[in-house]
Length: 365
Image (cartoon, rainbow, N blue to C red; front, side, top):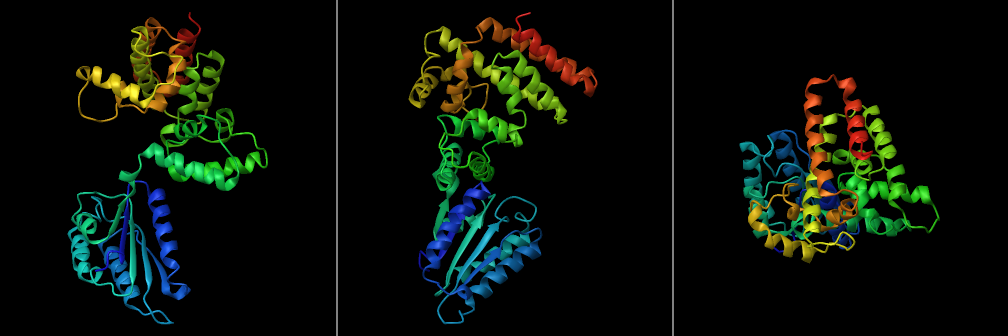
């Protein structure tokens, strides 16, 4: 089989996977100018029967000559059965993929693209694709924060807007780093600012962009650690007005406070300067020095400062200057007390627990 006959694009972010597969499809389409020589097949399957049907359609499309002669360009888009889901792990799906290999190894004049997300990289068919296709794993080519920034910057350039320094990372935090939403919210921001050449600011993002996913409690935690009592009280009110749960907010506050304690200790020890940017190199250097205090699991955790993104920690450094070590430790104790109150108090009193927490810790009373 020609190395460029079968293309496989896989990854964990469906938006990024689709974007890269679309680029390949557009490039190859130049050799297939006739609309009837190009075909896109929906690869989403809910049952083994769907997997079998999708593969049959792909085989039939590749083997059917174009109306004007020559081969076909076929794209199985958004395949969701190369993982450990009920459908992907089913024996029938595995057998259908196995029986399809001889056809894929002899595509003739046809070219086939398979884009899949989410995937399980130990799946036998994926291992076969790695050896038998022009294979791309977009998740391994770019780290999540890098790909988010690239997509937002490209969308912003298309729309003719720019972001102030740090605003793209602020947007990522607000919407949980969701790539597809990043592109859509950037277009929405562009529509709002119009022809104004002023860069998009964090303030504008906070006003225009709604919280999403892990960012559902973003404003409340930002407000709390700004040491601005009135903003914190208003943000807490808004959080509970939308009937959001108390425990994710409490978890966010605890996680951030853990990181602030570790940063404060490093600052008190003269190992970092809160007034200077924290570089990746500096973080790695300190991580090696203090590695014996942490587990070597490699997992990202707020219990380990050195597993965090340097940019995110850089955003926390100005906060370090507002809280001394004693106040941060007292805050951690107050957060524990708030958790104990949440266990016994009715849901309608949760907002008062957090407001009381803010008043006690931010007013100095």
